[in-house]
Length: 428
Image 1 (cartoon, rainbow, N blue to C red):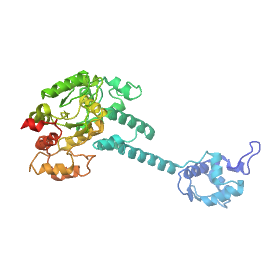
Image 2 (cartoon, one colour; image 1 turned 90 degrees about the horizontal axis):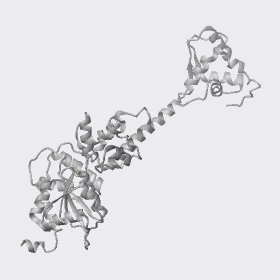
Image 3 (tube, rainbow, N blue to C red; image 1 turned 45 degrees about the vertical axis):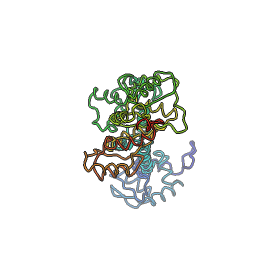
Image 4 (cartoon, rainbow, N blue to C red; image 1 turned 30 degrees about the vertical axis):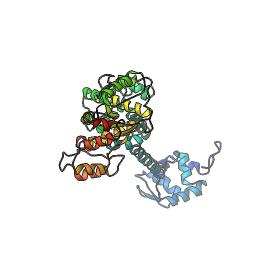
């Protein structure tokens, strides 16, 4: 825009500022702000004084129609001849800066696409593929307040909460303050963040979204929040740990007796100084989903049973904290579970939360297990297995679940290679 001296009117200014031309400049401004090519401008309806002003501006020998269509190039030529400025410069001075609505829409669409791409590609969603369904529901619900930034902030908090679960048997406000930078009430009942996280948990556990306060409390408790240190336990056997704390002594006594130890979260959280036994081979701890596998291992190996932990389905806070403690001390965790939809989701959860790796949980292992049983229950809703791209497809193709107990002998044979020296001779 050419600078205008405030003390001296710009050339043609009086003509351009005629009130009768105001509809013209408003319409031109609106069309040029659309961000799309413009060749003609449709006006009207114009009254007679407005038609006269337009005729004077364009140098017409007769009045235009009440709803004239003006060629933009012709208008630009007339304005430039009168004032030495372009139509764009004139409408910017008279009405205001020109916008770019089409460009703004494209930028907004790109921002929204980037938001949903970020969500579906987030580490927490990729580690537990069932959460892709939750991500899709978030996208279907649309933006919070129409804002990409507000939606991303809310989703970031939700993902932060999901990554921090299971909790540490603490009240919900304490958990919220710990993981959300002191915002103790961010997860209070009815908040947008609480609703979003509970929807994710319902998707993860394959349950209906909670419809009552009691159901919401139950879901939080299942995720290890608002729980206590004694209710949730984890079964373990063969754990021989170095340390004089209660956890090491209790686990060791049970291991020597050939019995399972039922460890509470309080035992795990107050483990004290602890380490793994020294040895030439990596210290491997096998993890199973079902207590029956642990019972069979104790029956076969007794006091010689190698380290084995049972999550009893979905791992609670005690199970996750124990496995994390063992992994932090250098144990290599190997996890096995049921070959059904829930078993695959549990396996993905265990691997994501504890750094465990799969143990005989590939598509090839599934097909080998199928050879042992011609029939079985339907596996239920199947989601992708992050560790094997073929597993979900193979389970979908065959439509048969293989529970852990059907491959117990294979798992026990693997464990036999890990028993303490001299086991075979004592067994014979």
